[in-house]
Length: 290
Image 1 (cartoon, rainbow, N blue to C red):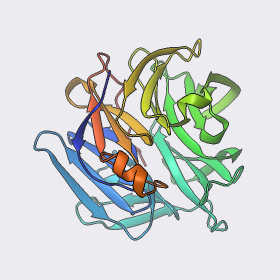
Image 2 (tube, rainbow, N blue to C red):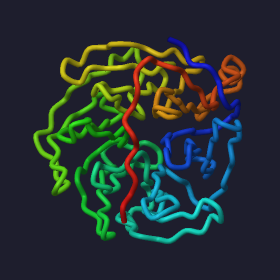
Image 3 (cartoon, rainbow, N blue to C red):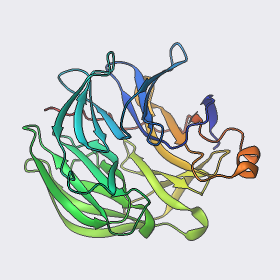
């Protein structure tokens, strides 16, 4: 399979794709340029909201609007006005880190991870923002926290530490929001690049964006086997999310960060938003219920 460009742009670090079924739009971000994008496939528009601080990830909010993880913690966001309402900043004492990827679990808790601003090893953590606004540290010593999702039966959570080139699974208790039983389920070959953002389909298979790999790969988490690949005509593939009617479209974000002039010339579509129809459907994204 191959992906086609749907929005041609030069985002520096396109990331965080998530489909909002209620609004019929795809949210995605440019972390470095501090931009929240709202892509409406019906009319083909891609609205930009410029923020004052870098935005690692975004999720819909059950009460309306959005919830985001900025470089200075969790906030509620009114996408129409750009007004932010701070919730919590668990790393206020760590100016050398920032939030990166994250999603909500089936009960509406918002999980988001951090990383060193320059990708330094071991500086990241994974946090759980509960619906009452409290924050719990779930994992620490992470290199680059990425690609979090939950199995359709709500019994397993998957999480990526990019620099380790592995995807780990955890037994997940939906009632308490706790995780246990860490194990590696996918190991990414060096030739395939680094595992970045991730989503899951209705069959429980993982779809993983590969930085410096030029593709999204579908893996079976029970065996670690590759099942399918989506070729993207750029090297730095960063995240993916199912969206559109019936969740049958796979949207893919990309980046230009770190590319020199020759690489930019060789990849004129780098930083753009892509899509394909992979023949399977995804799982609905969960909203933050706080």
